[in-house]
Image 1: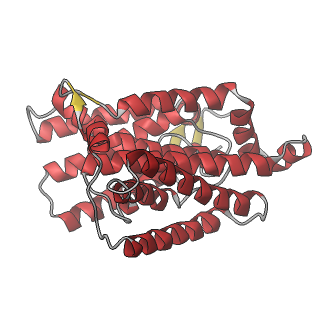
Image 2 (image 1 turned 30 degrees about the vertical axis):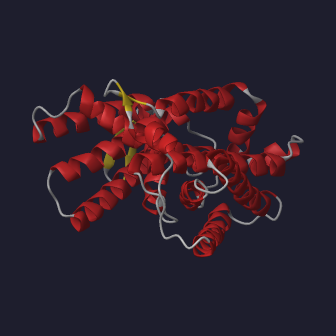
Length: 328
């Protein structure tokens, strides 16, 4: 076995490559620290406990959406409908606030999200439609239905429920965001579920070798249907927190997070080919992208320039990480 890996003239030490593949949280946490140091140099005196609380609060919805991508990517799939579902959930709860009420709005939004996930899961698990195509199609269906609901209720936007504003945007002691009350239990469930349950092991098995998983007697289609329903429910939860964070409820609220949600999972060590990854790295990936976004804002670039730079950085970092970790 050689101690290094050669790729078009560049030599990647074998130890680093293995570390990136097997323990991605360690190197990407170091990358996060480097980016924070750069931010501190650009804006001296700004990086403090209050700043960290703001960054953490902004990263929570993205981390949940990236968690949806992590779970689906473990099976070799992807879920491009999560942002449409997130936007729909936030808008639906807000639009029902002054009618049936907040609790009914939550129930309706989660039910609609579960149905969207069920549709995606049936397409992927039973009819073998490619996850990218199926989830993209479902995203357009969800967006269309959300627009129809908007026209039916004659609302272009509506007020966000106070409960969501509190959970999504306020912080305890101006430090810890209240959204952690939702995020921490969800994170624990995902981490434990992936490593300690049969369902979690099946996700890895399907992504690593779907043929072997099927021959072993596993009902992959049931796993995939359950997976995409869970992904949609998580997306709805992220949408509720995002509407509370931004104090905006619209049918396109989360659209700009499609690429970052995928990139956070990839940067966090989840393979786009399936069978490898985890939610811990994804959380750090979401923090990295959030700090980068804040850094570009702090540099004073116009909105258009920030979007170009942010998108370019995402593509370059994700592509470089995928290249390094996929080399054997």
